[in-house]
Length: 333
Image 1 (tube, rainbow, N blue to C red):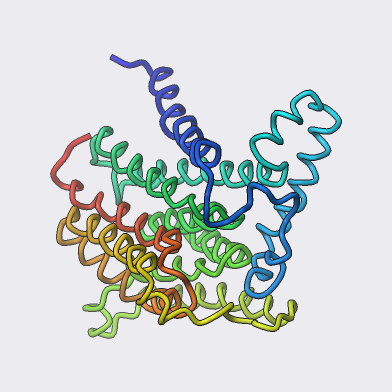
Image 2 (tube, rainbow, N blue to C red):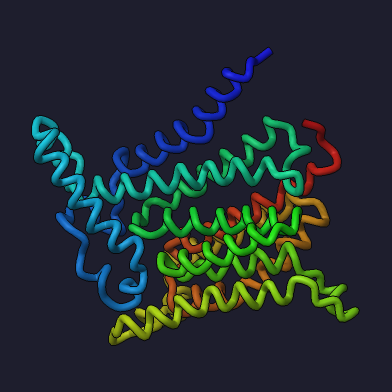
């Protein structure tokens, strides 16, 4: 029998240490051929131009953390500087520190989600950990496109998903207020914060009740939309760019390039994989979520690149969260 201390140690190793090691392997075990962050000495100019300029949280974190790391290494770890520079610039190490910090936080949030009564309280510990580990691996795989904003955006998205489920379960107004704050703040990191609205709508809105004029949760959905629109519009009024909304139109490229087509297939098959693992309730949730996520999916097709499969990660993670419904009434803890 494991003692409580053993369970805590095992949980720490699984939720924090293992994800961190996997993330470190992805950044230092192989080098991305997609973005040359490893050779950049400072935040590149493109991070502060075009649509990237609106990602103010990761951009400023990149600058300030790089300054802090440079100061710390020069003043306290000069004997390690040559070794560190062989593995990448101090800017690259700073990006790794930022991303790994929020990645571990994301793993902790996933752990909390799978322990919720409405999601996974009746799942066996082994099943929860397998789903959790699968989600972690998917996040690590997409790091061949390293950015300064994805890990932050994933953390906020999962935090919003956790708050949505807690609000659905307990109807505690403080959870909803915090959810609005998370959506508002995460919009300063990346526009994918809008998917928290899709998640909330998928788990809280019942189409059958809407037909019977039961508009429960509609008011809350409106507040979430406002929480997204205010910072989104505010950033575009405060930060003037030549291309305020998109960097380019890539629709034809997405359906003509073999790389982009393979990225699309990866996203579709990954979501379908979680779909077939769900019971009927989970499948309905995924279909509702994809319906409410149509604006995001259309934007990916128009202005994103399918080869950057990191754009599909919120959808894939949502699928894994909904798979837990399959075991809700069949597996005991």
